[in-house]
Figure 1 (spheres, rainbow, N blue to C red):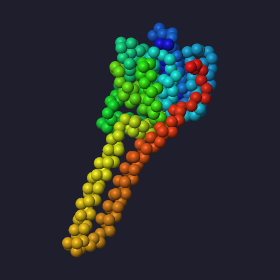
Figure 2: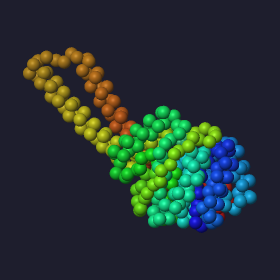
Figure 3: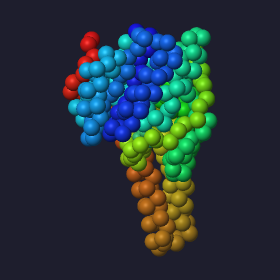
Figure 4: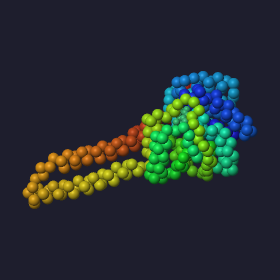
Length: 309
Ligand code: UDP
Ligand code: MG
């Protein structure tokens, strides 16, 4: 198998036909015949699955994985990679925001001796101001606090070698943050630039909640900085508290002036309580993920598939 194309699908019934046609045109153009499309149906509630079943019957290149429920975009992509057989594996969104035609360029560059060629966004059309801004801040923050370098302005649209897939399989974490994991794996990586299109039809499957937990997964998987902030905050607050305690004792014994101030009391109580809750929360984020991982559950559950082991 020369090329596997992994396409996560969550309510993409309106995009699948065009996606498929454009992919076919690209394969013809590239002159590759030994390829597979792995569509991962991530608990769609529309007609995506019946489209997949129908086309899997007609076209042997169409493979599908049907999840037992919605597991999320990152896990869908991971499952596709996990089941892929290609020497090269492409990750591409199913809503045509990532132009399939770029696969040719990715593949050409890949064949000049890279293990990873990611697609870097020159422009991002049809995204809300809110998404652009939060994404920008997120990548700035993670670049500062994490030791792996996650390239800016990239999503998961990329081509990777089967040995990178091999190492992805060996990373058993439940919270997948593929762009970070692939940077972490290393090897020779490069990029090509492209303009990201608007979503062709339908609406985004990334709710605010999903985006937030994706960001938290990225940060907790690749940085312990928030834990260090908790420690630092603990030191600073303890130091301030010590100064205040010394002052209180001094004024009690030497100035013989008992503190009547309710204000200072309530401020320090609230402040301490706030810092404690915050740091407990940070620790909780990590412990929650440790807990998730020690349970050792399967990362995803397949209801049915036409992929043979
Ligand atoms: N997706 C998925 N599971 C989800 C959400 C999204 O498999 O829970 C798929 C979706 O079908 C698309 C890709 O992931 O192919 C990117 O999602 P989307 O376009 O909704 O996100 P956005 O581009 O708005 O960030
Ligand atoms: Mg999209």
